[in-house]
Image (tube, rainbow, N blue to C red; front, side, top):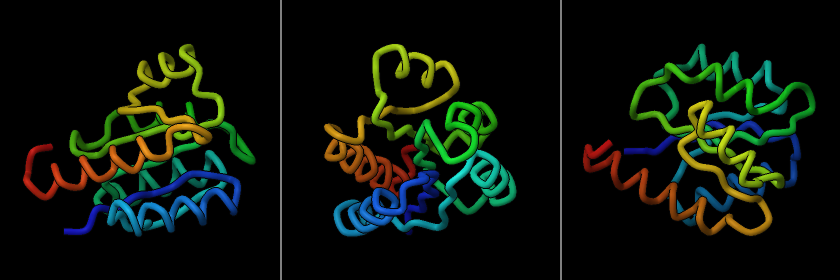
Length: 130
């Protein structure tokens, strides 16, 4: 069973490195990417059955990740939303949780934790524990 991630990140370098890392270390397949809030919300809504995890940056070329979180509040219970940001303060983490984020990771210090989270979610999905 493949574990499918959709990534909303406007930095091509970060996006490419993240995809490579997740494929190699967590066996997560990237099923699509977006650089803007509009692209991210549209794809996630139109492809409801084709993603297991959305990884969303907060500050995008256009719009922000908070609005994507809010738009995905009514997703399937098995679908996870995580935030990956350089601005993962306690206030930001709290606000993201209020909007339905399952986890928040700091880009500069918590990539390993994101990988661990993805591995755990993939294993749980395979075992039917989600």
